[in-house]
Length: 197
DNA sequence: TGAATGATGCACT
DNA sequence: GTGCATCATTCAC
Image (cartoon, rainbow, N blue to C red; front, side):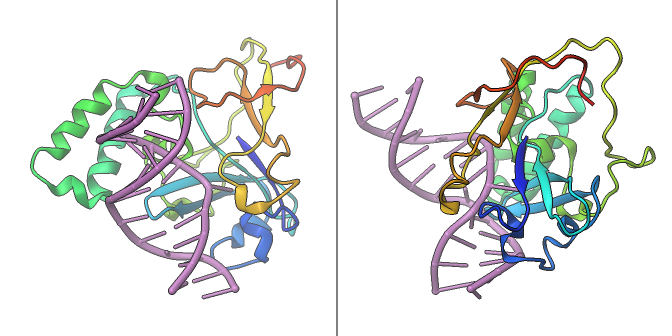
């Protein structure tokens, strides 16, 4: 995940204040904020602050544990339906073959890949991720999960924001997780005493 | 292994 | 009109 710290954070969508796109960021925590970037990729965020704070977490990667084949299907579906170049003869079949050969850890190893693997679009903005009835939701880690070591580093692709926002270690990951794209963040936080929630 | 590049739509100024 | 909170491919080394 990457943390975005509200309107003062010059890397955050909230830096221009409340707009039609980022409105849910200024609301209560636990709500999904999904936006389109580079015209092609959806990015999933979780609003984390109290109303007015406009803080959020970008989900940069997910380690697939179940539903692996469903994720492969969604990955192919996303690319073949969204990219014009896929209309060329044979391109869709080639993409299906490529995705079928991907290691599990690569199925959702990027912000655009997370939303593709789960079939998430900007239409999901506003969804309550704390509602047990939501199709997409946050859940507590199962009792007995292995403790994790959290590592931190600079956020990716925020060079336009300037310092200190470029260098501040606001990107967090599970140490050694194969689903985390390089460059791997450095250790910064001691091992978690109990499974994270 | 890493740098450069094309694909693609829309929020924002 | 400009510039993205990206990804996969291509090409150099």
